[in-house]
Length: 189
Image (cartoon, rainbow, N blue to C red; front, side, top):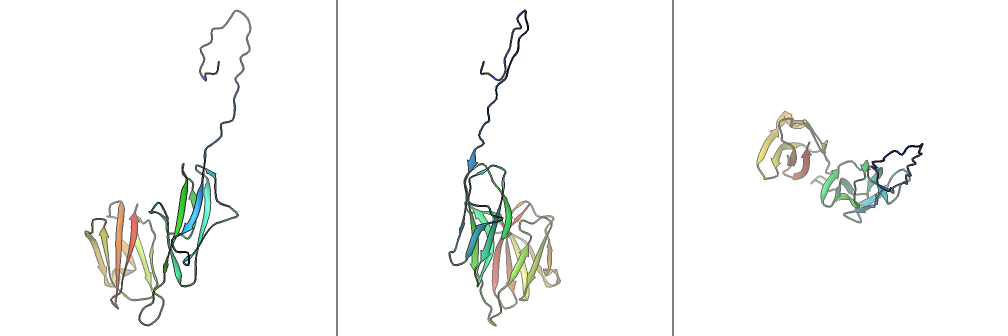
């Protein structure tokens, strides 16, 4: 029989039953890399890995390298955030994927110092950390509907406690002392 389950009636004598197995090929999926701005940098596979195909669950190392004057922002797939780490291990899903390394031009302030702002981790859980070479006036956090959830200023700028936030997408608006504003998308887990 070719059925995996068999009800067998035993005859009067000895019988040898043999089960035959064959290897089932695992489905494989393609992983390709791209960049949002050709001049912004490069996206490559790490550790000698290359464009798929890969089986579901395989970890693939990817590397985003910004060009001079640009900074890495995030990896996305189908417009959805994947990681804010330029070098990370991507776990292959059950489907073809194009990962896009998102870069942005580094803008300058009026005194020509580099505009540098780090907000991490992203995704975050209980605390958001801020680092900037410019003085920050205030930080406003809004939910996806635009409702202001928190406004921090003064001494509360290095860390922002977010333990009471619900899981979801948030917009962090940083207003600098010189009037410039930078808005970043962040995810609460």
